[in-house]
Image (cartoon, rainbow, N blue to C red; front, side, top):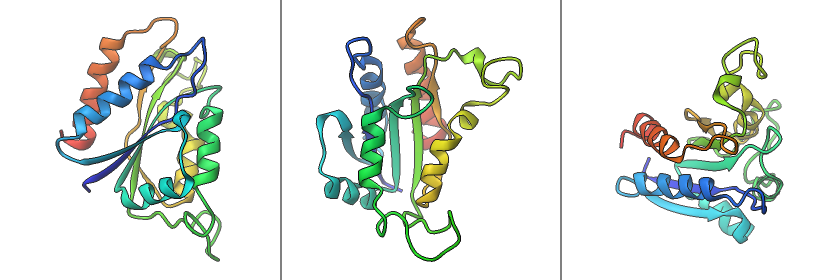
Length: 183
């Protein structure tokens, strides 16, 4: 696995200018570019659907750098997925539901930013009812499972608006990339 597509799915707003997501996006590239061939997409900058589909076919690994907005992808990123994950190219055929993905042999990783604080996870008494980050992202994992992609361990930066700690997030991201990619 030598080819990585890194996608910045942040949707920019006056209250959320995306500096952290851009910083994490840039850090992912910086940490991996010496060991992997990297292509990138920043959704809000615009894209050509066919070109994006070719990037997915080229990639061994896709990294989705995204904020979690209302427990899912930002609207523009969801529209990107809707356009790029084309039937007959990403999924299709007569197999049992959920077993007709055409992107097999590729892996993906979510690198996410959350307003939710870290303590809201992994505790049955807190908001996510004991779920870890993977459980909270299950619907997004299913989206990628449907097209045949295999998950790598997800990364999360938490409490990013109320208590941002960019140095901590960068250190944790570097450690995460070291564990997942051995860089």
